[in-house]
Length: 420
Image 1 (tube, rainbow, N blue to C red):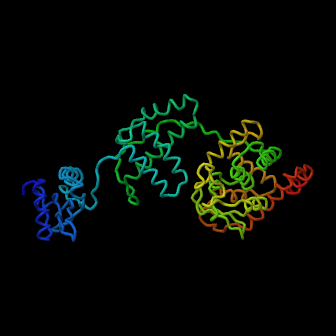
Image 2: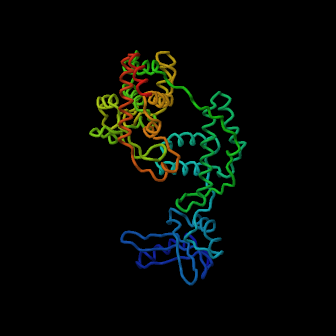
């Protein structure tokens, strides 16, 4: 059969409309194996025209839709058929498993990686998306991802490093490395689908060294803890109140700042006095009883209309971000009104002072949702340790209450008692 033309298609559309009979138009040769066809079907108000890849295999015919006419032109349909299906048909493979063979672009790779993070419930997906969008604009969003070379990534990172932003440079390298690692695995992951195949031969960021990890050791002693807590209760400058409350709750519970900043009314069980996260950074559910001081503070807060305990000042429909809390703390410590401290230092402070108060390390680990690596904890122990957590929080609450009262004699006596 001769090749199709736009004139032949228009004539066929008129015939089907008048006769109300289904018709198929084949493009070129290929009878008995497979070819491009246009399936015309009469409908009550119009005639539909769909491009199909048609294949004869083991005496049976199968079809796969490519697009609709006229939104997909004849020339476009031919190009897609030749690109994605002609070779598959010639090799005798099923067109059912054939698809777009174009290698994915940098933008395709980054978008697919962010979607995978979002689908997995990773809280980092937004920050990652923001970072990768800037990187894509620099590398070339529409370039094939497999064409990116290590030298290009080095030239992207070097100016950031030379500005003194070492952590940011390392983050950029990390974003690219993670996206390419995911792209290489997704090629053959039967559990997930991606709109593109990337055909990445290697990870261009794999050979780029990372910044040495500096493990923090800073924690607040009792005097510094009291200084910060008292300032948060009564700051000397105007501050968005939810920020002050969020940091006090962090000091009293030792939780991860990202999870506490996003605290929603649905996570608070007032009757049981328990905070319950269905999913956390390590992918596991987590629940903690609150010490009395934290309960009093939380119950004094009226969640906003969106249910957030600590809403953003600029966007009340969203919770405050960890970055905002970090910047707020940075500004205040720069003024010298609070100790030099970061959000992670507060988590380390809780761990240390709760230990001094007499809370066993295993219970502190469970209260802070640290992943326990022993075989028993990982695979067998499903006890939630809520009674033990309550006792631990009661011990901690008594210690902090005494601490905030600033009675050093009582603190010393309590610490000696706990040590026994």
